[in-house]
Image 1 (tube, helix red, strand yellow):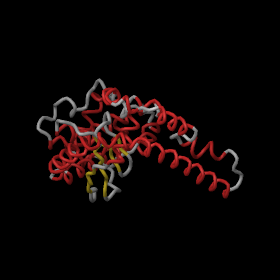
Image 2 (spheres, one colour; image 1 turned 180 degrees about the vertical axis):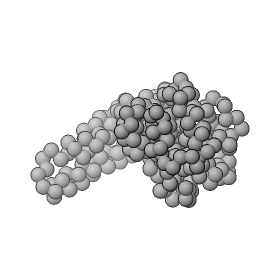
Image 3 (spheres, rainbow, N blue to C red; image 1 turned 90 degrees about the vertical axis):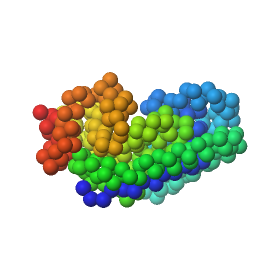
Image 4 (cartoon, rainbow, N blue to C red; image 1 turned 90 degrees about the horizontal axis):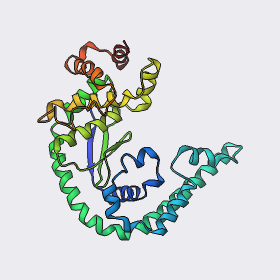
Length: 282
């Protein structure tokens, strides 16, 4: 299905600082984030002394502008009545957000320096080791992923940011946040899962499920099955816990597994993702 993106593996202090702060102050984020990627209780307890009153006050200030589309691009426009007013309001709100975040970073950076001094060498060593493992499978794994999903890659590059303190991984269109996991094969699956999210984002998949009256909860299962079969040939034990999709976590995985196994073995039988989903709907 065409060319596949090249992965750029990165270790950046300020990306790690952002997640360090987000884990410590998870209560200020959405329930999905605070109970998911930011839910690192041990890290939060170990660094509880860094949750200063000054930082609490700054995060409370941030709540006035928040992290959500409504607060930024909706509420801030309540007094606008022309497109010029919209432009001014959005620029002002954006500057306020940037100013508060800059204060948060400035306040927290001195105390984070000691943590980063210990974290950076470990992350870089891990990144170099994993990059060497992944480089040989990038082309076949991502090509297989596109074949199974019946979807071409649009990205030329995807940035993979290694972050020490997160609980799980997360993906956007061109960027992935990935924790260093001790088992390299599990890390391959974790990365493949997030790559599958970038190839087949929810905004593309969930409307198709809704149009076929399928449960939207299986979107995550479909993504994980696509990821699993894309790296199945590149891990030592594809049946291992943490690699094969877990039926206690992924909705209807036992029912969907045979369909995607057939897509993996016989991709030529299916012309499009819509056809695969119609078969599921039957």
